[in-house]
Amino acid sequence: MTNSSVLPPQPDFAAGGGLLSRRMLLRGAAAGSAAGFANLAMPERARAEAEIPEWVRVAGARARGYGMPAEQEADVQRAIIEPFGELAQAFSFSGTPHHRLRGTITPSGLHFEVHHGGRPDLDPARHRLMIHGMVDRPIRLDLDALERYPMVSAVHFLECSGNSFFNAVMPEPMQAGCDMLHGLLSNSEWTGVPVRILLEEAGIRPEGRWVLAVGNDAPSLARSIPVEKLMDDAFIALYQNGERIRPEQGYPMRLLLPGFEGNMNVKWITSLWVTDAPAHTKDESGEYTEILADGSSVKFTFAMGVKSLVTHPSATMTMSGPGFYEISGIAWSGAGPIRKVEISADGGASWAEAELSGPVHPRALTRFRLPWQWEGAPALLMSRAEDATGAVQPTRSTWKAKYDPSNFLHYNAIQPWQVTPEGMVQNVYA
Amino acid sequence: MSMRSLIATALVVSLADLAAAEGPGLGAPLAADEIPFYATYVMPDGRGLPAGSGTAAEGAGIYAAKCALCHGATGVEGPVMPPVGPNDVWAKPAGRYWPYATTIFDYVRRAMPLDEPKSLSDAEAYALTAFILSRNGVIGEGDAMSAQTLPDVVMPNRENFVDVWATQGVTPW
Image 1: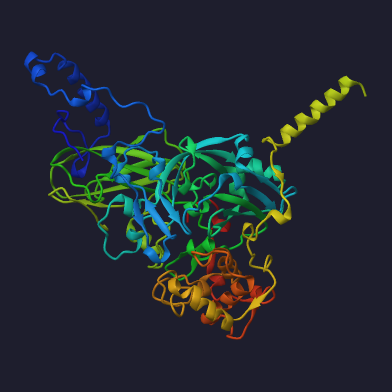
Image 2: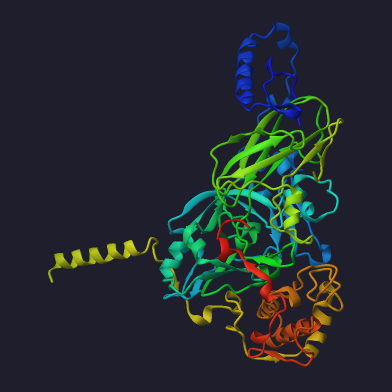
């Protein structure tokens, strides 16, 4: 976090704890550019003493075929989470470091991973997408064939339904960054072929109401998908952020079901088997069902609820002294576009509406921002998102009351960050 | 029919094809023998179950050799999602919590063991299914599991699920 002592003369407070009006973002920018013009004439002496770094005295490096992040950014990595370590290595996750990112698109190399059987060493030349079951014409398509189909491009988040599981079940809040706490969430521009076109080509029959999607990986991961979703906005994604999908996201093709829990967006997809009923696969029987407070369970809980997260500042960060900061974070919902994000700096006593950085895509991460004057006093930062259906994030205690204590799926509670007078930012339950 | 009308007819037919299909129609015919078993799933009513059978006694030895390391010596210890319940590790043990016993057979056959999936024979998958069900008290120790018996197993938690897709569709629960 960096701060600045430059503030417009009369702070326009929007809520308690130093939250400023989002209008000040624009006003501040205008003042800054005016100051730039005023300082254009530099004194003669300053120019003579200025450092001339060595890299401006030599020719730079040549062009290269594939660009990589700056060497100095090499520590921006996914956080590896392996619940069972060496015992079950293929059951392996990695979390996106949201506290190191400031936009909405997740760089492909930092997209989260959840593997139930590891990343397969797949030969794309031998990969096939089969469409069969309750269809008139069972067909198979290879990558070259799919390349010739009409495609769509859309920005969508993917979130593991187990994202934020530490906060859901740990008795005391774990002190870790957004990569560990909320990293099983990423956002990409995906490009691929609408599933509807393929199901129609195969001649899907009226009795075909569900489709089993199967991956070409070791566990042959399988999920039952309602036909309505597949005929609506589902597609077979071939490209992620413009380039071919990364191996850990399903190369050479994955299912994309906008807004639905990550596990259903089957990676390395090889089969769409049209059926008259859900198969009740392992993942829809036990792995991704939720036990409620009364001991009953809910199944086929597909769409992800509305959620948000302040990424700057966030746990493990340290404030660099009192002064001006920009609070920044991400909001998303599986039900549609984000309508509003409110921020509190006083633990929910007062709220100010944040600026949404457009365009606001449905079922995609939306960046929000709000200026903040931190005076060095204890603060409790929260963000609370509302989506276009009017759904609002619950508090942790409200969310916990719905479920059995063991449940860690579909956790979408408000995330409070505590800022100490020393500037430490900590994960708290509030 | 004149050449002109032939061309006109052909044009109308191809335009009609285009209207019916938005894609180029490049799907190649898929023959039944090209479809591996894991591209389908055994359904709760038993559709898709293969021949063969196995008992808990047969499954015990396979479990000890191939499963116990991750799931625990008796199926309750874990650490990886123990299939026998109740246990202190995992609230949703397969042999007690899952609504249909057919899922155990299919999942074991396609995905287990983690490091050597699809290595088990159908008889071995039936035997392991019988072992897990028996350890959970869902079937008797001597009950053989097969295409005939497995669909009739009534799982204790079956009626305890609310189908959220059926009740509210895409609205998050």
